Length: 127
Image (cartoon, rainbow, N blue to C red; front, side, top):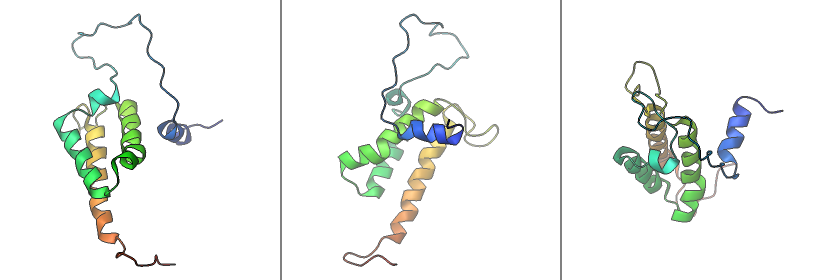
């Protein structure tokens, strides 16, 4: 039986559809102070997150279909997992959704760093 991080990684990379919630809601949508689960589309629609996904796509230089498979789908599953979690208790990503914002910022920065290590056109990879 897989536990801990292995189970979470399997969930992130898995292709199984997520079952829809039951039609009878156990909560009121307008309860103040509560954050309810959202789909990835709703979580990734903010201007900052759309801009970060665009930057990541530009820096990866991948065709759209491949980018969706390798980046956008795992990010969507991650967004549904972390929902509106903060990234920290007191620092700059302590707001609702801070963990998702921080993750996308780190991905964009990592893609920028990766650009420094590209091989020249036609060069053989090192052994």
